[in-house]
Image 1 (cartoon, helix red, strand yellow):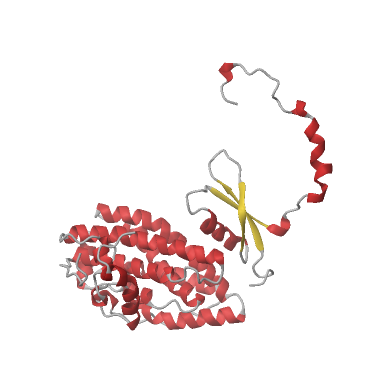
Image 2 (cartoon, one colour):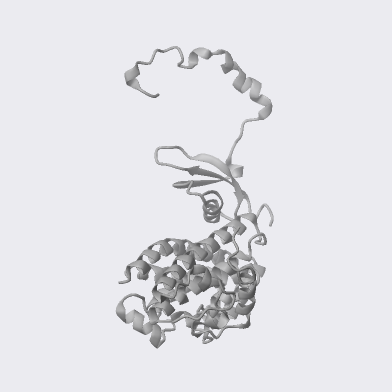
Length: 95
Length: 258
C-alpha cells in the first residue's frame, strides 16, 4: 500500500443540523469516493454523523508551529476584544 | 439448554424466514473472520460493520422464526443448535473468504440480490417481515455500494487486482443460479404476499451486475451458475467447518454468558 495509491485524507463530520463540520481524524483511501465510504465506516459507527467531508491531506496549508509567537501572542494582551465587560440583561437568556 | 441439535416443524413461512436468517448469519460470520486481518485498517472496520449489520438482520429473523415455529426456540437455539443439514443458506455465502477479491465478489453477488429483495419485502403482507425489511433495506443498500465500489477498483485497478477479481468471479459464478431458486414451499409463501418471489428480482440483479462488471472491465461469465442445494440443507464442505467454530462454545458450555 503505497502513499501514492492510497493517499491520506482528512475527515470532517457534522453531527447535527446547525453545527459546523469538525475535524475528527484521517484515513487512507484510493480516491474521494472510497475515502467517503471509509469515513462513514470508521468515524460514524455510533451515530455521530449527518454529513461527511473528506479532503486530501495535501490540500491543506497549515501554519508553521515555529511562527506561533508572531502569529498568536500579540492577541494575548488585547483583552478588550473579549466581550466580557458588558452587562447582559436577564431577558436575553443564555448567550 | 440442550447441546444436541433441535428439531423444528418447518412450515413454509418458518422455512422461508430461516433461509433469509441463515444467509445473513453465515455471511455475517464469514465477514467477521476478517476482523483483525483485512488489508487495511479502514477496510477491517468496514467489513466488521457489514458483518454486524448481517448478524443483526439474522437475529431479528431468527427471533421471528422462533415465534411462528412455536416450540420456544429462541434466536440462539436456531443459530447454535442446528447442524449443517438444517441450515438453509445459499451456497454462495458459505464459501471461504479466500483473498480480498473473493470476499468482495461474493459480497457483491449477494448484495446485488439482497438489496432489491429487502426493498421489495418492505411491501410484505406480513407486518413483521415488512418491518425487518425496512431496516435491512437501508443496510443492504450500503453493502451493495461498498462492494460495488471495491469491485470496480479491483477490476479496473492493477493487472494483479484485475486478475484476482476475474478469478474470483469465475470461481463463485457457479453459485449464482441459487439466488433465484423458488421451490414449492417458498412458492406457497410468495402466494400469500408475505414473501417476494426471488425469481422476480432477476432483471434487477442482471442490470446491477452488468453495470458494475462493465465499469470494472470484468467479463460476465455466460448464463447463470447451476450449483444449488443450500436451501434444502445440502451444503458444500465449508459450512460444517464454519458451524463447528461458530457453535463450539454454546454447545460446550450451554447457556454460557459473559
